[in-house]
Length: 451
Image (cartoon, rainbow, N blue to C red; front, side, top):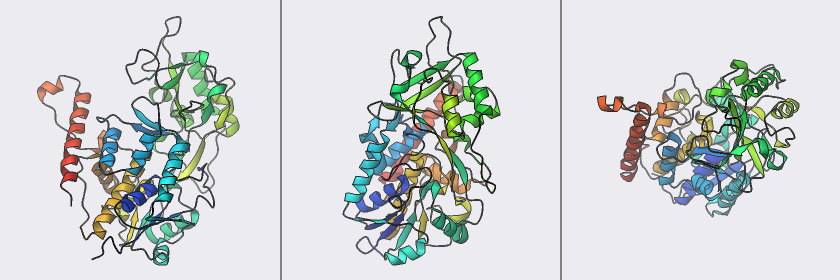
C-alpha cells in the first residue's frame, strides 16, 4: 500500500480542473508535478499565460444556495475548493451570481500554485501521459487539459483511449469598452432580482422593430465557416447568438434576450427584448455581452453589434470566436472515479470528461483529486450520492448513452414527489427548494462520515 509520504501525482493542465486538483492534493501533503504549456504557446481561445483562465465569460453563475449552481459551489467549499476561494476573493458585482475580475483571478490562482512548496511546475507540452509519469517518477496521472487539448496529446488520447467522436464546438462572447457606450440609452438593473433601482447588470432595451432588424442581420451576417473535415456540434446550453437567430426570429427573445424585470420607456412601453452586459472587472471599464457567443466574422460582429442601442460607437476590447472542444465518452471509457478503464493509474478531470461550465469543470478536478487521495491512503473509491450536485454530475456523464456536455441543473438530480397540498401551490419552486434542501442534507451527512 502506498502512502502520502512516498506517492507523487502528475497533473497535466493548469486550467480550472488541473489547478483545483493540484492544490487539493498539495494541501493534503501529496507532492504534485504540474505540467502546463501556456508559457510556450497559447491555444486559439487563450489570451493570457496565467492559469485557470476564464475564456468564454467571467461568470461562474449563481451563488444562491437553493440553485443547482449554488449547491455545487457549497459542496466544493466544504471540500476546500481553491478555485471557489480565489473566485470569492476577486468577485465583481453581479447580483446573486459569482462573477470575477478575470485577470486578477487567474493571477491569484497562478501565484498560489507556483508558491506552494509541494507543487513543481514544469513548462512543457505533454504528448504521452504514461511516459511523462515515468519521467517524473509519479504514481498517478490526472489529465485535466480541458476541451482545447493540444494536438499531440489529443492524438495520443484518440489512439490510446477514446477512438473517434471526440469533440464539440464552443463559442466566446465579445467584450466591449465601457467608455465607448452611450449610457443614455441603457440602464442598470438586475433582471432576476427584485430591486427597484440600480443593479449590477447594464441593460440595452430594444423595441420590437429594433429587435427584429437586429435578428435579421444576425441571421444573414457572414460567419466563420467550419473547415472541410469539421461539422458544427454545439452545446444546447451555449448556442451562438447568430445560431439562435437562424433557428427562429423569437428564439433569442426567449433566451439571453428575454425582456424580464426591466423598466418601461418614457412613453410607458415595455422593452420587447434586451441585451444584458456584465462587468468584466471591478473598475467597470469593460463589459461582456451576456449570452452573445458568436460565429460571426470580426468585421460582421462590429457591424451587427453596433445596432444594439447605445453601441453605435462601440469599441470592442476583444471580439467573439468559435473553437473546437474535446470531450471523452466517459460512460464507455472511464470508471465512476473517472479513472481510465485501460490505464489503471490514469485519470481524467474537468471539461474533457463531459461536463460543461467553469464551476462544473473545477468540481471534477476536485472530485478526481479526492478519489486519488483515497487511493493513495489505501481506501477504495467512493461514489457521491446522486442526490448531491457533484454526485449528480458524475452520474450524468457516466450514464448518458450519447455524450452531450451538460451544466449542473436540477434535471440531473432525482425528483421529489409533492403532496396534494404542495401541488396546489407554486409546484416548480417548491420542488426545487425541496430538492436543494435534500441535496444539502445528503451531502453534509455523506461528507462528514468519510475517512
